[in-house]
Length: 466
Figure 1: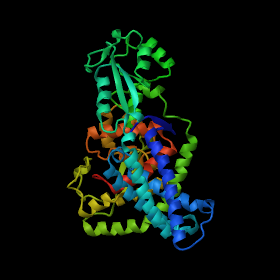
Figure 2: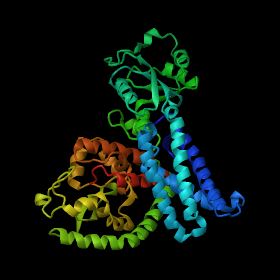
Figure 3: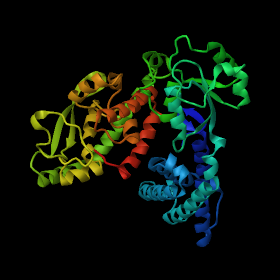
């Protein structure tokens, strides 16, 4: 759900989600303290000041809330369906408590006792469901929706109307104004000539934003109107910026080179972020290789036993600045999956996938050897998925700006992977490119962290992993 938004580290977060997240934080803190006090009184133990157990309480809150973000508790479906929310909350609380149980062996003083956690878990589920029952309709209501006026009545304006009709839309269009810039698609639009003072009209309708959706900007750009609207305190946005914010992707139908050049993003001043990203990649890949080494070896043996051919396969992919590198994965397809080395798009329920390969893909175990590629610096944990040279050359012919996705290091997971799971055609590649461009344009460590956490949701609910 996307309502009124705040921008955190170049990434838009709806106010409704931020408010609910802060409220959940306080409720989880209350549940953790309640669980502690209940158990303490049950066994006749003195209840000391809350500050003496602050770290165990915070560890409970952070573990549960991170799991909530990971499994999609703050997504559109969970905010609009109490049944969906209940299922995701149950998974999130369970994952959080399992993580805390493991952490208890590592640092027992940093976590609640397991009996405390059990009480806190029950209280947390009750409080989190209760707040959603009480606030559910309000969070999806008009109180958290921006009121928009759209300048334009053609196909671009109609795209905004279609987006408004989608479930979870965070804005309400209170008026379309035809600017005589081309064919009119939105029938209910008011002609600009019928409005004496546009700035006054915008204020009277209580609009908080005006979106410029002209079909032909040449000789049609109403600069005087826009300046007056701007000085009333109402936000003025171009449609490409508006769609980027609302959809979390760069809309290829509306963007032009000048927007990509002059809009905020693709900042060169992120050297510290790049250094931090590389340090994280090195440390995390070393730890992951140590932890998953036995799993990779066992899986490799099973692949050899399951079907003819090598356990691993190496394939050249296009990476940073268009340079090729070798990617290593556990083999999940038959040895004759590609005839004469010709690249073939993967399909949903691809018949070339072996019996074992199906489960390796579903559990993402086939991706684990790529951690070595991350350690070498040819890939990152987060970034656009690298493609074969043959696909890249074909897609560059069909899709504008496809080469720009290679301006950032490729990754094992990415913004496109957690938002658009399928990629079996040029049209799918187009959608993924829109997400990849958003990532390249708005990259920050915060966005990387968000992607890594939400990758858990993709693993738990794969929807046709490849």
